Length: 328
Image (tube, rainbow, N blue to C red):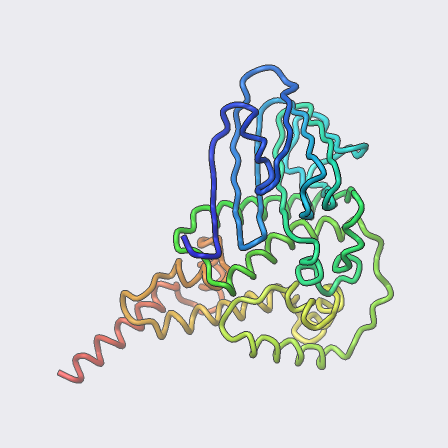
């Protein structure tokens, strides 16, 4: 495992396993439903940031004491029956905010699944940068419930589970730059559901689209070949996600996510073309550039370049072979 990625995944055999329902935070648990508890619990730690995803098959009562000084933001991924946290009735993909040093009380009336990320409150300014309401630490000092949009919430939930799955099976670890990208990708899933329940923000000033695009491209040039998440750009340039989206649509006819994906695809293409035979794999390069679904990555790659990534990597081998023949 790389220095910046810690992974722990286990099957649950009894409710006691849920005492560590959130990585780094102790939770008091009482089983409410009948039957032997079965489920799974997975943690991914990226530095001081963690993501936990748990599933269980019977009703549970959960309580957290007020000794944890980290911010916890959770999402309800699945529920067969009612789920309530404090006085909030949770629906699928809703987001719950548990501020630091605040006691928490939750009841799952049946089989459920959840995701929870835990990090320092000071980190919101960076991770939620560009959205004034979300990047302000005061926003997260009170317990809150954000109702998810049914469509976008389901997309965010599936994406979060896929990210966990791929990070869990990554055996090569993460570099500091890719660790930052994956943190932001996880945060983005929950932020999408938070933003969908907030009233529209009409106070943003829309700069000249082309001037903003130039600033973004200058920032990307300084970042070099490492993957850059949209939220990182928003934080660095102090611009909202909506403003950034409008600028990219005006200039390129596509959103910033699509633009950054194309840029990352180009980075993969260049790395594969210049790689020495046997020095790397398509999967390793794709993961390094933030692609965690290799099948979809291959589709994107072929659509853009008209060749499979393995063919691009083969060009480097062929070039090296020809060079060896020429020297012989």
